[in-house]
Length: 456
Image (tube, rainbow, N blue to C red):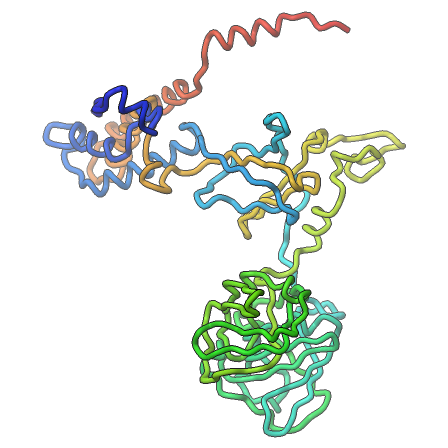
């Protein structure tokens, strides 16, 4: 067992305050191997690796509903009304916003909305981008026109098909978007690192082409993005030198993390730094062809596609809990009176929901700019410093490890496994009671308040 090795002076001058109430997972494994494993003991033989595995599993399971959760994260909700889940997040215990006095106000989950995936649809409702094309002699450049917005939803790397005049395989290797349509260049490699130009077999006008994503998924609607013209860059240094005549409005729209839609940069090339004073942009990948300088339009788009209509409506609408007019669909009006009030709307603190696909929390519009605290549960296995157990639950750890090891062994009597199962259950129950931290004086004071008379 761990003993105090530091003096009181060393403790109070250090920074590990309150650490004596915990025991590390390493100590639990060492003590288990010493006391529970060996000749004439309950577990005659066990590998240390097996004990370590079951100890981590026991710690994770106890972290979910027995051990106290001390993890919390505070953010100021931005205009996007989104919060990224913490790296070691497993589940939340509560989410609340904080007022000027530092008091928490509990937020409630909203169950009647979500953030579904939105796909591009043409006027006929199909998940297909079809555009009219004009091809040229001895050129892989193609001019496109079609439904408004369809050009913006094209992506470098999309497959080009729909006509026998376009040799296959053919992919978009370069993209320029305008208000009336788009112009593309096509090659035989979707990553266009070493793409060979694909030349149409004839000069045509109004050739109908179909564009599909290279990974087989349906196209997603994109933001309007940013277009810079003209630009030039130097070979292999990954820096784009932008012409000084580019309008400041385009600079302001350009953001770190945007994707580059250009023939000389592989799919996934992003903006890593913006140096407006030097008229230059740093990209994550250098050019893939031997060009010292180049001057032409370059398109940048956000890696995240446009918000779904459901999420856009939720974040832009006035929350029902903050409306004074109860004649709305949320309150299910019946002859002018409130009927069937849903308890999740019977408060004015705000609401949220968690999009598990994107790993983000979405808040209602009345939470914008407020300080929000996320109290959450982890599995206590994120870092070595987290792998510790409160001493109230130390015995429960030993019982969990013992039961897990013997239940996984062959030729172990069933009565012995059942005995350890009962001991594990009792130890976990005892740990829960101890960690509930019920104080008789505090409980008595609360009960005294229940005896007060309420005046009408």
